[in-house]
Image (tube, rainbow, N blue to C red; front, top):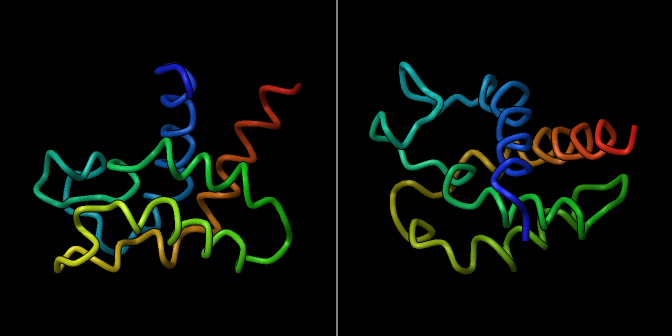
Amino acid sequence: MYTQTELGEYMAEIREHVCSRCIERPPGGPPCLSHGKVCGIELHLEGIVDVCHAAQGDVMDPYIEQLHNDVCSTCTECVTDQCPCPLHYLLLLAAEAVDTVDQRRRN
């Protein structure tokens, strides 16, 4: 469980380093939901942070597997035209953003 301050810090880092590269970002986004685009990051931020903490490593397969098991399997958008969400191709950047926040906190 994360505080709103912690989640806000993760979201800010993700928006700067991940959302800025999202090809599905609507004009004016992020945030995307308020612009009519359902965003997996906005919906599942806490789960994404958990995935990044649980699947540490140098290869993406554990991150992808954990994402599918813990986030995608419970996502109501998973069977809609909103899927696949940008997390499928931006997960590496999200993991790096989470790690950046964690390193900043340790220092």
